[in-house]
Length: 184
Image (cartoon, rainbow, N blue to C red; front, side):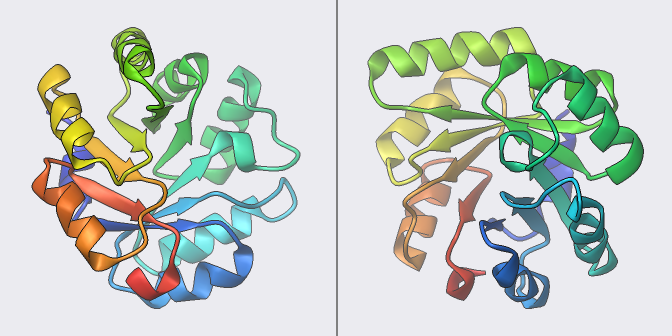
């Protein structure tokens, strides 16, 4: 039902925030990489490196320098860069990605009860393939989110050790995105 479920083989996702950490992600056991870095000048090369390593790559549209996080930016990425998908906090970007044939992960920040409700409404409108909830160290909230939506949940943000990864997975997350290379 949700194609992302089929591509996540290793339940830890490498969230690469610095280009210097990409090699660690490529050597790691992870099979999905979130690129939270890059620019118009090198995003094609970074994406190809991940794909050549046999891994799936998702680009965070708000973090790619020189490519606007808008419909045209998504169209450019889909036609020229060709990642597996994108990540965005913006519902319009999620819709544009889906229209362009990319998988889409909507990132939502859960800072209070209202943010949970707004997040659920946003994903109902944009129909992403998965939701990344942040911070990812809240097992009770992850469990609650899995009860509020049938969409796969990815926990991310502030995850610092194997125990926190395991707690997120036990709470029902499909995977946990982690920025620490030693956990990839």
